[in-house]
Length: 103
Image (cartoon, rainbow, N blue to C red):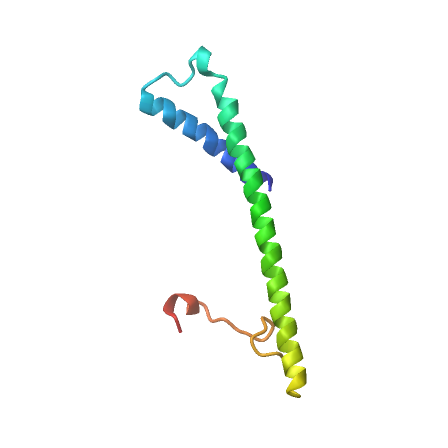
């Protein structure tokens, strides 16, 4: 979580430097130094918000995965199968590069 906040805070500072570079204004003008913490705080708060969004998405995906595995388990019991459940992550072996080649 902290690394995302620090990254986006640094991104906010980079945006401020970019803005001043486009305007061709000096980077460390005494009258405009107050803006750096504002940009860093805005970027950091975005990073904090993004961490919450990511956690919510992971919770949703985990719940959905568990529901699908439970559904497969019930289906296997109903059909009288024994052994590993087809499509479960325990028995699936992914070959390196298989996602890239489509095979």
